[in-house]
Image (cartoon, rainbow, N blue to C red; front, side, top):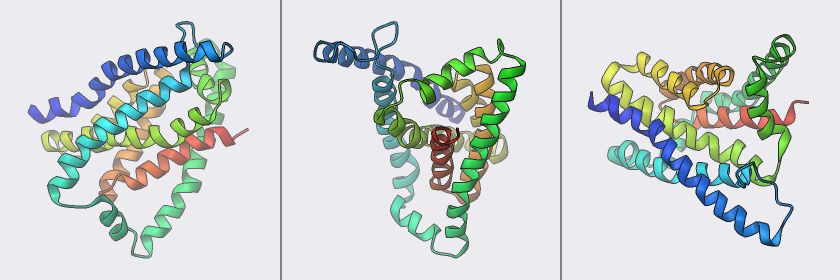
Length: 233
C-alpha cells in the first residue's frame, strides 16, 4: 500500500506545483507587460509559454532530484555511465536511430487520425483541438518549442515511467505497473481524447523503459514525437 501511495504522489503533486507555476508566471507576465504591453497572455493575464516552462522546470528539478536520489544513487549507478554502457553494443545504437523515425511516424499517424476525427466529430474534438492547437499553432515561440520538445518529455518520463512505474512495480508487479502509470498519464492530460492517446503512448513508453531498464530511450522517443508535431504540415 505504501508503494501505491508513493506511485500516486508524483502525478498528484503536479497539481499544486502547477498552481505555484501559474502564480509565478502571472507575476512575470505582469512585470513584463509594463515593458512589453503587447505580450501575449490568456484571460487571466498569464503568458502560456512562460507558465509551461516554469511548470515543467519545477517538475524536472523536484522529481528529477527524487528519481536520482532514490533510484539512481541508491544503486550507486551513475546515469551517464549507465547510458554509455547501454549503447556500447551494436543493437543499442540501432535502437537509438530507430527512435527518430518511430517518433515521427507515431506523430504522423496520430495527427492524421485526429484530423479525420475532427472532420467527423467536430464538437467531440473541440477541446482537444483547442488544447493541442494552442501549443502547436498558437503562440509558438522558442520558449514553447524548447519546453514541449525537451523539458516536458524529460520531466514526464521521470514522473510516470520513472517514479510512478517503479514504485508501482514494487506493489503490483511489472506488467500491471506499466498499465497503471499509463492510465495516470492519460488522466494527467485532462482531456478525454488527448488522454486516451496519451495512455496508449504511455504503455509504449512504459514497456520501453522496462525493457531497456533506462529512461533514455523513452525520453528520446517522447521528445521526437513532440517535436514532430511542429514538423508535420
